[in-house]
Length: 158
Image (cartoon, rainbow, N blue to C red; front, side, top):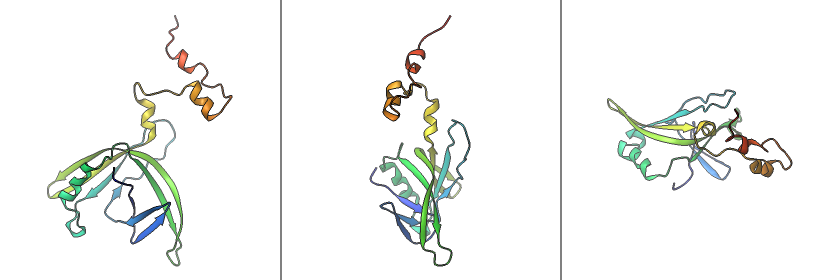
């Protein structure tokens, strides 16, 4: 891709973590599902074409010039002082990756629909790399949890 972009549901701009977040009331984001387990919890982001804001259907089509597949997405809760609206703190609440962006059209409405997957989608991919004893030693030297995992996976018991 050509860069990293930041948006928030508000007005103005906020600098945080070396990135400028621009206020935007057009992006509609599904509420992330916070659940236990290993199942992936995808969410959807929607950006409509709005001529009033300079977002024509042709401009939305420019997304195809970006390398968006598997780009990281992080959602934050931004906290502001209620008295003076000063930025106080940002708390990351969701991490995911862009899977696909669909071009949707219904009547006169045109929009982009981005599908965001969590890293948990890797738990169910066939042929995806499995954790090994060697990987575990990099994370926690001496931990023997995966010592036999790679070998036993391919053994058959009668």
